[in-house]
Image (cartoon, rainbow, N blue to C red):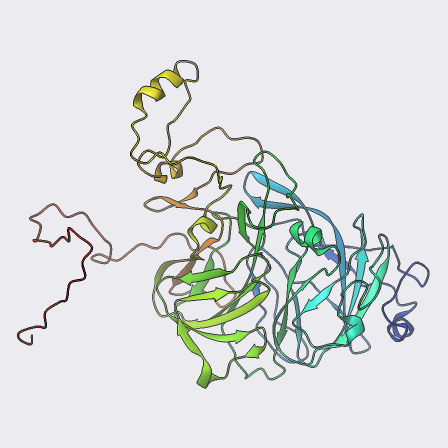
Amino acid sequence: MMNRRQLLGAGAAGAALVSSKAWSQTSNMGLPEAAIMDSAATQMTPRPSSGPDYNPVVTLNGWTLPHRMNNGVKEFHLVAEPVERELADGMTAHLWGYNGQSTGPTIEAVEGDRVRFYVTNKLPEHTTIHWHGMILPSGMDGVGGLSHPGIPPGKTYIYEFDLVKSGTFMYHPHADEMVQMAMGMMGMFVIHPKDPTFMPVDRDFLIMLNAFDIDPGTYVPRIMTMTDFNLWTWNSRIFPDIDPLVVNRGDKVRVRVGNLTMTNHPIHMHGYDFKVTCTDGGWVPETAQWPEVSIDIPVGAMRAYEFVADNLGDWAIHCHKSHHTMNAMGHDIPTFIGVNKSQLTQKIRSFQPEYMPMGTAGMADMGEMEMPLPDNTIPMMTGWGPHGPIEMGGMFSVVKVREGIGADDYSDPGWYENPPGEQAYEWTGELPEFARANDAQTRLTPKPTSKG
């Protein structure tokens, strides 16, 4: 993380303000440092040194925006600007975001805090910030033309309000939002409870679901896309370059998931069941929490779930819409399953020796292929595990539960070695008899004739 002084709008001249009261309180004080990030690595945030204690969230492949204290107010500086984001090794997107990244930095504060946001606009058009799901004054809500005028290019506005409830929220523009959100302008806002004994966890992970339509070989999203996205990401990152969720055995773990795509996402985690403990509206009372192994995240919504990590291993976590765990999907690719392409392959290789037939038995062969691709393009399926290609992309990662992980250690422990007798294996002996249905008729299973 680097700090840079934003001179634009640092004094009274050139600073457009949402409220005159906020301006009277902050004039001649200058802007807080605008922290920027040019790395796609997960950044750890230290526990607070003053005020109520809380366990900071871990934003996969992201970071938390620092603040300064000014007469009891927490001050943050968000810069809306064009950014370059490494979606995966070998692919960079030219996006719009905040403070050098898309998604923008996570904001963390505590219930009861008064916060002040300096928002500097370095985009070529006006913008705003809407504080999604939060209770605040109407004039601070960030709907351009309704709450306040849009922030013109080159200007700085102030948003200031009290945090009246804890939970997980989001921020994004409400100004030309079809363009600005499609270009990657969004982030998460976590408000920790004032009471440190309320809903504590040992590990607290944060995932923003977002999506882009970027043609192979290009860098800029197609902003007019409404449904046919081809890159499904977590925090603007694609598997296998989404960091794992590293957990110590016995930890109580929370996973917060926000969705600012244009479709719902059923997030499924292997190896565990969990309880849904928080929604956009707030915390779910213990008596109302419900068990799941998949939780559907609606558009524009957030869900948080918790579990105790008592089962060692490497456990997949992913969106259960199968095409959301693929990259650069094409909607006009014909299906060749069952088609013999051997003669056709010989003819094509006579003038294109590198040609590889695909899809005659399924698409799994693409997980092993190293096909020539346009620059700035990643394969449809990629990523290798300890036993071969994982054949995934997009919205997929791994929860890695181990013994002896330190409280502040989130480094990748490598692949899990299954103990003897706890891994599927090939059988070469005699097979038991098996039944087969030859039609679609409903068949009733007879009751057992004896117990045992």
